[in-house]
Image (cartoon, rainbow, N blue to C red; front, side):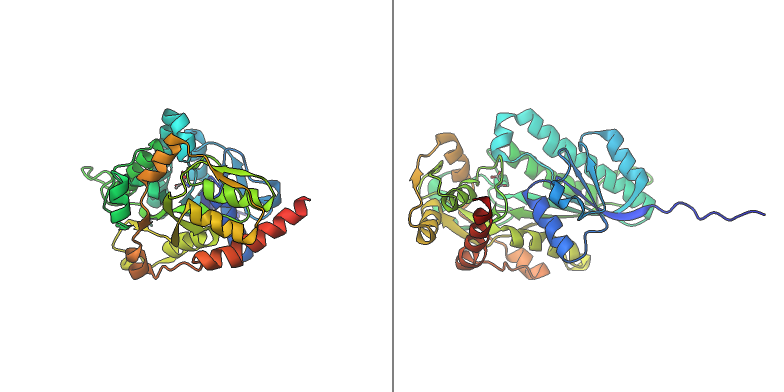
Length: 349
Ligand code: AKB
């Protein structure tokens, strides 16, 4: 008697790259709390912190530059969404621009190609969620930065960092893979459903970022709560937009869930509020009067922050997919940062 075998069904999953970074942690914890992480496969050079391994379907320790690994993912899974977080941030990237280019650009191309191949085998475009950054902007001088506050998506796109150049180029690659990939070929592939948010400086109560240039804000706060002195590497008047990590996660998931027919853009600014370094220090000192914060600007890192806009215009995201942040500056400090970091720091003692 012949037994009819069921064909091997590939598991349907969401792939998150760079999952062991700040945004990855926030995203996985959020999805897990919603009981929505069981189909999540994560890929990170460093694996995933022990405390979080059980939250996801599978942890793959590996490199987005490894083509064999990309092929393995292609064959083993049916990936319907890729959230591509893996990247070297702006300060790190300046120390090794060519490595940054490989990771930030070639890594993104590898994932876009994976999305194209998956789309072919599924007959449906893969959603590709990509966090870009205010680093794509390059304000020409401080006078312009002060005058033009809410910068739109298409303005001042002259990044001065490798990371900013990489992110801007990847935004274009996303548009290309969505709309023009193999445009001259007789059998054109289905494109990728590319969706991108440009983040401001992100601040998490749970983790400290590494390798960014907006890191002075979270570093100032985490140091104060632990009673450590902090020398801020930008001037008091340095002003850029910021967002709390829960809002960053919210924006990624809102954009991923938005009906495609509502989206008229590939790239959307998202922001919450803008503060100067001095205003952040004052808010920290209101809560921790003993905080020892000094300003010792580092000329090169200051120049990077000066090139980023003071504020960005996120009206397209608000209009097209109802984006709005939960946390303004007051709520960010009183309801999120101060209580959570204080609680975490108390366990360290
Ligand atoms: C960085 O500082 O590199 C990042 C960013 C603004 O994208 N936080």
